[in-house]
Length: 319
Image: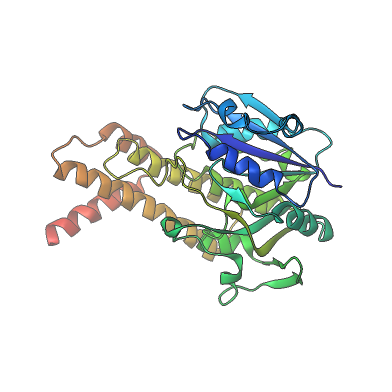
């Protein structure tokens, strides 16, 4: 068998969520795995959700506790502890669940096609309406069929495809080989937004080959989600948008890009600027003080936000 290490970052306030995720791992049809749970100073300790598992199952779980470092920092801790005999590392968010054949399909796709990176499709409730499956790319994207069972495809321009819309990619559907999990890491400082997208892109650009499965590999849960639970009136919203811009700036500078890909990156950067400025405008409208220090920090890194602010002001005056 081919050994996989499952990395689960854990930070929850509701009991039973981690246990649900772990049950989906123990139900895998690919049995050769071990699990690393990284308790990121969770308000509800991970030990509480491990009580109902057998001694044999508990022996497959390594629990690491660390000071809070955010999801990227927790995943990095897991990656740093993948044992030498593992060939693949798989990610699972603590509030998500795997389908039974996820690891089996991932190992088949990675080994049969000599690939370093794999994604399955994801499904979720109406709250996650923006996600779509790999098969949904077919009408607009060049795809090469590699196998029918499991349904594995390859996208020649995967990097460009994800820059146009990366909502078909999710960490709980991602499995990577040793060439990636030994060296690629999350930028943990970008803990409010986009560290996963930057990691995706680093892996795609560094992989010898990436394959994708049209089959559903994971179902999204509804535990703590900082990104989607944050409104524009939150004091962290501006920092979130700034971190998104930083991640895109790193992505842009780290690799060469064609003109179309640069345009995609700039469009996402502009969206981050606009979201940030609209959030600050709503603060002013509510007679609250805007976050001038954070805005100045952004303007120092990205003078284009000043132009965006002027355009926003002109639009307001024109109305």
